[in-house]
Image 1 (cartoon, rainbow, N blue to C red):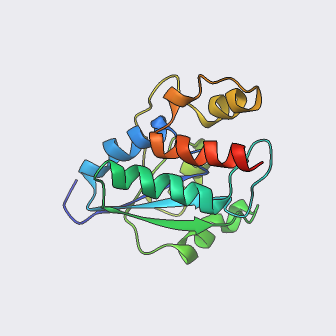
Image 2 (cartoon, rainbow, N blue to C red; image 1 turned 120 degrees about the horizontal axis):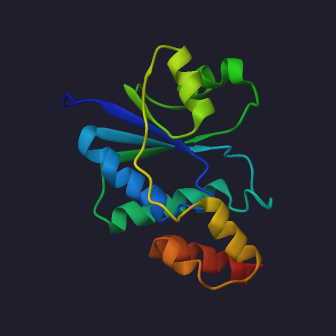
Length: 162
């Protein structure tokens, strides 16, 4: 990919796990900068979306900084539940970008329909936000290997605060 391309990576990051970190590290060599969009930013304290946007931002920033990654910015985008206007809604919150990275079929379709280049992301098998949340909900301790240490610290802090 030519130098100077800016990538966009959209996710809920509930929580930011090792699969997300793997995705970021595989995307970065192909872009000069990566905009990480925390989607559905207004939701938290739900079974499927337990973490606040501030916690998710902190998970991402601390993890990437610890990894020595600095070619990124973070944008918080609330969900509008309107597929016809969603891409323009995202564009309202983020700087200009050239390419979208996603494995979400709906997200892919919406950006392609607007004429944007979309690429699939390499997946780290055996890791998902759903799995981490399930293990947290059942108080299993084997969620720790699924998340970066910064994420684990934030989750532990939120568990002890509740």
